[in-house]
Image 1 (cartoon, one colour):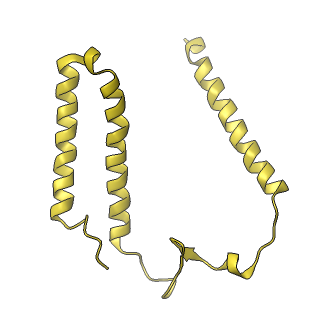
Image 2 (tube, helix red, strand yellow):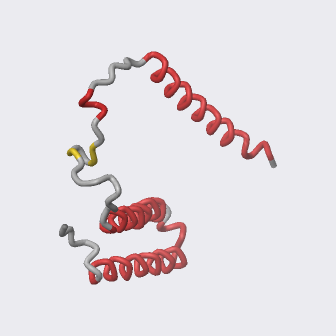
Length: 119
């Protein structure tokens, strides 16, 4: 049983080693010239205004959650489309239900104003 998963664990181990070695090499060999401009905190490419204790609007979090939900939709749609004929009617019905749930989510978010970006 373990031999069936050995290639996957080997790939994950090699990927982790490559990622850690690249991170380690850039940390050790990279230039370290901190300037005052680099030390200024910023958000989305612009300088922050206001006090640090101010909370961000819930719109930031709502947008992130909606992005994740619809990004996952795209992740599930591609393999389904690739195996459409093999899955038959069962796969079609399951994906239709999945898309209905996401459609209801989109309508709900739209009605609540989550897609309107007003400050």
